[in-house]
Length: 170
Image 1 (tube, rainbow, N blue to C red):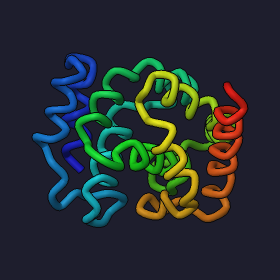
Image 2: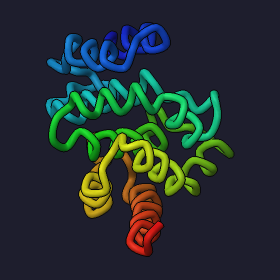
Image 3: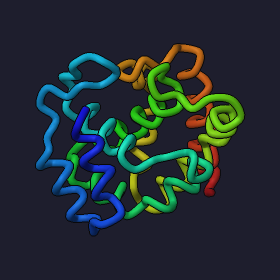
């Protein structure tokens, strides 16, 4: 979708509020995700944000999230209710969808350290604990991104481990 390229092109030049406003400006009407139109607005929006901001060639998933935390936080805040859970599902898609999946060692590293990525998003208040809980409870959250059941189970297990860590008092 052309909107991903537009967002990618301005991400490094934008203040967080400007980036979030541009995400809303380009919109999600007739969003093309993985070769078909995605009608779910929060999912399409999160897809655009993740693909525009996260490039695992730049480091681990946690490092990429840390580097882009201000832009991610602004985009999620402007996305309304459920935007944090949608972001987590879009990250599943980044790692696991056949169309965008990272391959080999980088993919395995991101999958096994997904709990670290959740910690980054939670500690920098990009997503709330409630949003993580909502995402973690729905192993089909990545269905809009063609995430396989086996991959979803692995990532949601990392979500469970993260939530146990939170429940134990960090």
